[in-house]
Structure formats: C-alpha cells, structure tokens
Amino acid sequence: MLGAALSFLNAYALRRDTDLAALPWGRRYWEDVNGAIRIYLGKGGEPEPAPPRPFWYGRAHVHAWRRTTYELMEGVQAAHIRVAEFWRKVPIERIASGPAIYPVRSQEDKGRAFLLSIGFKALGGVAPFLLLWLGVLCFVPALIWSGVELARHGRPGGAAALALLCGLSPYMATLATFPHSGVGFYLASIVAVVGLASYAVLGSPTAAGLLCRAAALGAFFALCVRCRQTAVATLPGFFLALAIGAFRARLRSRPHSWGLFLVLAACFLTPYLLTRDTAPRPTWFGLWMGLGDFDRSRGYVWRDSAAEHACGNAGHRLRVADLGWTGIECEAFYRQAIFDDVREDPLWFAKILAKRIWATIALPKLWPRAARDGVSFSPSRSVNEGATDIYYAFAPTVDWIGIGEWRVELPLPFLVGPTLLLTTLALPRAIARIRGPVTNSAARSLLALSCPALSALAVPVGFSTASGPETQAFAIVHFLAVGFLVDAGLSWRLSRQSPGLAADAL
Image (cartoon, rainbow, N blue to C red; front, side):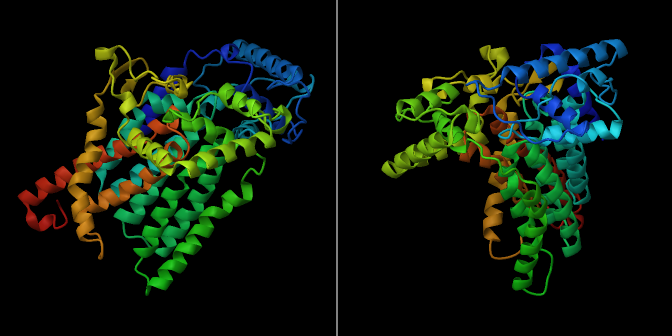
C-alpha cells in the first residue's frame, strides 16, 4: 500500500503543473479525449474517412481538437480543478452542440478513448484530467496484487522491493501518466506477469486457482493491449507462468497437466481474441526502422522520414490514406527488404539480436551518470540511431529514484548487479535439478524471475531497443531481483541460526 501511495504521489508531483493548453494539438491526448467524448455522447466510435489532404490530420480534425481544448480549459479554470482531481467534471454543452467530434483513427490504439468514455459515464460527465491518470489507475492495482502474491508465497523482500522501487521511480510515474501514448499499460502488463508467476512458481497452485487468475488476467491483458499495442508482446511471460503452474498443480498425469495448460491458455486468450483490433497497422514500417539500433551497413534508420524516403526511392507511392504513415504497398516493400537482408547475411541479423539482448538486460546506454558525466544516457553515435535519444528523453531514465524533482541517480551496478548475482547463485542449482522438481529457494526465485524477464525482452529484442521506454521496462525484473536477493540473504541467515526452520534456504 505504501508503494501504491508513492506511485500516486510521484505521478502528482510530476504532473501537478500540467497545462492542458500546452499539450500538442495532434496525437494522442486530444484525439483520445475527443474520441471518448464522442462515445460518451452516443455518437459511436467508428473511424471517420481519412482526410483527403496528404497530412497526418485534416484541418477539421485539428479544429475540433483545438475547440475541445479551449472548452475544457475554460471549465477547469472556472471550477478551479487541480490535476490530482481526476474525478471532477466540466460541462460540455458547447462541445456537444458544436461541429463534428472526430473519433480515434483506425490505425491508433483506441482502448484509452473507450476506457475514458467508461470513466465519463461512471462520473456522469467529462473529467478533463482523467486521461492522465488512467495508466496509474491500471498500474497500481497490478502492483498491489503482485506484491500480495509475492508476500503470501514467501517473498516479502521481493514484494517490498517491487512496490517501493516502482513507487519511487520517476520513470514509472512519467510513463504511467504520459499524454502521448499509453506506455503505462505496457508496464502494468509486465507487473501482472510477476503476480501470476509468484503464484505459479512460488506457491502451491491448484487448477481452480489457476483458472480464476487466467480469467481475470486475460481480461486485464486484453485491456492493456487495447490501450497499448506493444503490450501483446508480454504474452510469452503469461504463457510460461501458466505452463509452470499447470505442471505444478499435482494432477494425476502429464497428459492432464497438458490439458490444464490448454484450458488455461484458451481462458486467458479469449478476452483478447474477442476484443482485439483488426485494423491494419504499419508493422513492417516499425520493424524496418527498428533495425537502425545496431545496423551500421544496410541503411536502416530509426526515423520515420528515413523509412518513407527509402520506400519512395524504391519507386513506391506513399498513400497516407491507407495506414497513416505509408500504404499497403510500402508495407510489402519493408517486409521484403528485411527478409532479403536476413537471407543474404543471417549472421548480421543474429549479431543484432545478441546486441539487443545485452542492451536490454545490462542497459549499457544508461551507464553514464549525470553527476559524473553530465548526461544520464549515452548519446547516439551513429546516424542509423536516428531519433533514439528523443525516445530516451521522454521520461527520466529508470536508474533515477525519488519523488518528483527530489531524486537521485543510482549507479547502474546497484540496479543490474542483483539480477546477475542471483542468476550466478541459482542457475547451477536449477540446472542440477533440471530433471526433478525445483525445490531450492534461489532456483525457484530465478524461475519466477524468468517469466517477467521473457515478457520484458520481447519488444526490445524482437522490435528494437531504440524505443527507450519499452527497453528500460526490463528494470522491473531488476527491481524484483533486488528483493529476491534480500529474501535469499534472510533465508540464509535463518538457516545459520535455526537449520531446522529453513530447510529450503540457500
């Protein structure tokens, strides 16, 4: 509960001076607000036809968002609403009677607008600051539940470290309240994996307990994916935890365990499959740019304009109306370009994947310290990295700890070291018991740690480490390892004092 309170306090300290009028007219804050108002007024959330002009937004869209801004700001000033008062409403009669209110475009994540409209209906009106807090209101329950699961199953140190370090992280608070996109939902999904893994690996899972958690977490996962598409990459961690739980549920035979896992997987996936967004997205466009994080020879660059120019230079026409950035024809170009380069030189691609794994786990871009080097992350050293530094500057880097402006930067070994130490201590014991049940405390901790680690690795390794927010999310695993190491130390001390009371200690 203290960690949850710190999360809210940190979010308020970072956003208390937010001026709605200062937010950009374009995506995505005002687009989500207008889409939510449209749904709230009963006008539906169907996408409008794309504007004929070759711009991201038509003039009518920008005019509508700007008008909504002025109306909400007048209501905020008249009612003296503070940023923390996300439940307070303003009248929207003038907005409702004005020109068309445009919904969220088909290629964007529409979950935030839908969730915001539910909040408007629950409150009975439009709350101007509610969208800033949706990520926190989703992240904090996942954090509390994961902490409870950890504490219930013998890892109080892990529960305390995860809750307090996340609550004291300006990085977490900034991204949970990020107006530009719903990265907070991606973080919440990884934290939810921690809770499921705690029950499946550290507890004594039963079929009923696993089914209840799979159903609840399936709905939560579907919500996170609708609000932030990259959250779908956390699925492997959920599946690994469900598989471990199914095979530890003490069923009569291995086929029964496989059957339970299939039932759990179906139960978990059903909400996502029923609510997933089927609108086409420029997936290969992002994958092409993503290779710019470590490619230095084949022309990949982490910048929108570079990808568009590459497509245009290949003789393809950019059709903004199809996907926002590029058309279906260009998607085929990006896919073919990547496949051709991988087939031509598989070792080149393998090296990129290896470098991404290292960059995600060890976070070498965060090795500089502001007090010593004047910067908190290493600046880009190649033109291929493009706008990478902009993405890392979206939020304070994850090695900062504190409340609001009162923060300190931790040396990175204090963040990464516990994970490496725990792995060094536990991996030999886990390998030694590979053919039998894992009963050693440290080995079970490492197995529980592998589930959120798998979830946090998927985006930076499979997509790109140039997207700073998702890459730094692996710190959730490091936070948990800090607590597990504390638990291991306490268990070892207890075993020295009373060997009979700690049979499974280090």
